[in-house]
Image (cartoon, rainbow, N blue to C red; front, side, top):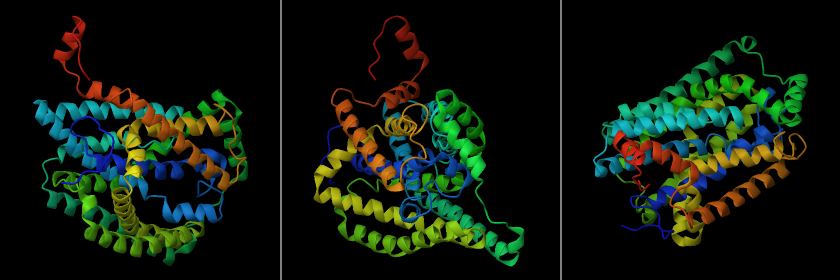
Amino acid sequence: MTQLPTPAGPAGRVHEVDAVRGFALAGILVANIGFLADPGHAVSGAMPITDGPVASAIAALVLTKFYVIFSFLFGYSFTLQMRAAERAGASVRARTLRRCLGLFLIGVAHGFLLWVGDILTLYALLGVALLALRRLRPRTAVITGAAIIGALTLLWLALAAVAALAPASVPPETSDPAEAARVLAMATGGPLDFLRLQLGLYPPVAGMVWLFQGPTALAMFLFGLAAGRTRLLEGLGARTRLLRRVQVVGFGAGLPGGVLYAWSLPRGGAAELAGTAVNTLTSLLLAAAYVATLLRVVRRYPAVARVLTPAGRMAASNYLGQSLLIALVFTGYGLALGGRLTPVAVMGVAVAVHAVLLALSALWLRRHRYGPVEYGLRRLTHWSSRSLTERSVGGYIKS
């Protein structure tokens, strides 16, 4: 079985997963940064970056494409954690519940303090659901995930049909300049102002994340579960013919679907709902094409994997690190540049933030086996009454 030539990590890790996760972090960053770069527009308008070519490109190529990769990898990694628990003779249920509790608590703190669009609380809740579904056969998991995606697509199409038949009943979204100015002033006014804004925004936004991203994330968890059970990603980079087919289908359907989605968003009403329906399907195909392309690239250019893998090994730390650095640049926590940079400049900040985190991840892992957040989650996940007793009498527990 061919493995990516990447830095050595803890036993049991799959380097293909780490490389893809490190790549997906870049897309997550690009998708999220606009909301703090121009928070007033993001809260009162439809797009995280002011309308224009940059916004269109992000909608077509990035939005909804990378969180599905992350969700798929969560399901895949769940199977790796199950194997680790079984090798250790530990309870899969207890370990998973403790890990999900840790994710949920970190997510709540992340949502209130840094980024209202936090995804960790959703992953924690769906992780419990995945625990209950862990014994599904791969075929059943794929069918169930496909049924969820199909149902979502039909729901959006039905809503689009209703909006088309009764357009007057679906008023177009309009931004409120006064509200946008108020939000921007709070975001950039100072640390306490930004915290007050977060306290008001996070609860309703968290509910929207759970409602609108939850079903798709659950479907991707199930796909990842099936892929992990069959070890799909392990050595996949050597299956060139399969990867080429994924690229042809993924880019062939995913790019037009993304363009349609970008075109539909500013139009609202039936057009936006229909675009969302199409995007529900095609975003998965485009995401698959991205992953296939990455696997082919890193097989040909191993240095790419060496750059991406450290960030993938400590993805949770990087995810929180992105939010922290973005907040320091754009909010009252730091430079308060929110609303001042052009979309192109915002993308430049995104590139700089990702480069800094890639470098810091590589440096950190030269001396540590796990990222700081991963270390804390691991300690909680592996916690037991026996280990607690050993620590209380001075025993040393190897992490």
